[in-house]
Length: 172
Length: 279
Image (cartoon, rainbow over all chains, first blue to last red; front, side, top):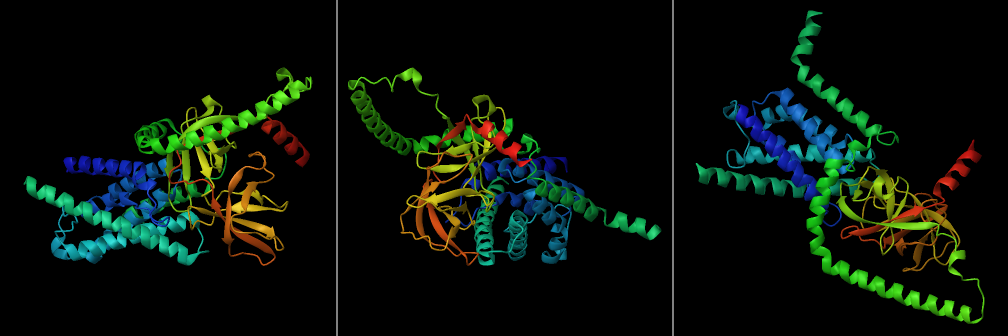
């Protein structure tokens, strides 16, 4: 249990660094920016303490906010996603998967994982955009941006998840 | 009472999340108040240092391009220098003392060179971090320009870093005008394109041609007549009685590396005077 917590915190820290130093410099066609740090929330074990999940999410979002000068924006969006994580997991993963240390992964339960990740990322992106601008003024523009950013983020998440699985498989 | 307690215990994690979300929204909405601590921005020591380190690696990729730009700039300045020298020489031969050096007033504007240590793109709220701060004379509300044109305005400054609101931030406003006209409008960014801003609230009769230069107008932050960009077409106007143009920005925010911060020595004086009349 202790080791997994340390692993999760390190994963979050690495994702934060990746996000602020690399991914936020990217703006594909000026419409989409990959928001990859949400990946840590996708990868937490199913049985994790909900207080721990919510606290970690808030802290990660808060640190991202400090780097991007967007106080509260990422923290709020990530905390809301963290709160809805458990109900979403119950919705997508079958009861057979449900044991303490079940970590969602692309090879374990591909279909469910993809649906789960897509929902989490879309929810997070939409929250980020609407908290960031508080306006539906330019709806098509906003939806394009949400779609584009979510798409890039998901491609990255699936790519990284496949790679991490292969590494884990070859080590064992 | 018992039911209430049970409810609170059962849904405690939801309540916890709601408290954190409320705190998050508090941070979002209190962002604009000026008293906010500089520690919560990328101008704080740790984030500034981190951004600076990563930018010192990234700069190498742009060396040849920057070098070329500097050479071009140098050539331009040199030709201006010769023109001025020639002028000075001519006046000298007339025997006037009007150009005696020590009678020249100290310049109103001083330029502080700085490097962009980070540029973050996150939809509407783009910010830029510079590697110069209070210790180098950079203060909030100073204008920032690049070799090509206007970049933005310093928002906050710590000892060694500062955060800039660039043109491509939804909060940015600047009064601007076309080069060949005296009517001025308001420049802002609608969030759709990193290369284009919108010049709004121009009179309906204002005519333009694609490629007309857009310059800064009355502004306490920028000197008059700095290049912002060129007109690239008609924009959708939010109000029928005004005209709006798309402006292709002179500054490319994807590749920006070196900027100059404008230190206006009369800024505080003008500011005080204007404040005192308002009361």
